[in-house]
Image (cartoon, rainbow, N blue to C red; front, side, top):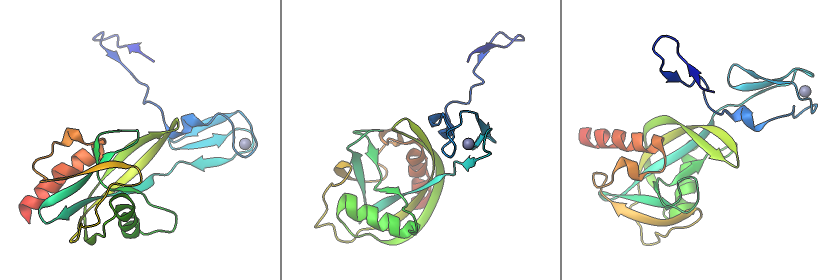
Length: 191
Ligand SMILES: [Zn+2]
């Protein structure tokens, strides 16, 4: 909704945009239609009192080095089809972040990565199937000493081996990954 500011006649948009709760019209417990948004992160049913919080999903991405080259993925699917991404994905239930990253790198690039070092984190929005997921992305640096078996698989169309200084942040599909690349360069310059 657009409104006009009476003081300077500039237009502002007070709508904070869609939230995860916008995907729901009825109470999942009683089917009631009197849903309200609670503290911008939950739905509350006015009929049965059901309260459901939309917590952040945990996702992990790896800057995988082979010698001085980064192994980057080209996304096969939307969002961000054709753009660069890090190997990684969502952390499964009852899985550690490190195990999730190890699994995703094996699934997407068919290589084993070792020596995981935490780099940074960033919030991310992920719109899938009309539902907005609020994500916490965690970024790690790791090494793949052997890449004889390297191939793109799963939701990865292709891979690229590049110097971290030869790739532009805007080539990545997601803002959080662009920020992480800048952090990576700072981290590399210090070590
Ligand atoms: Zn209800």
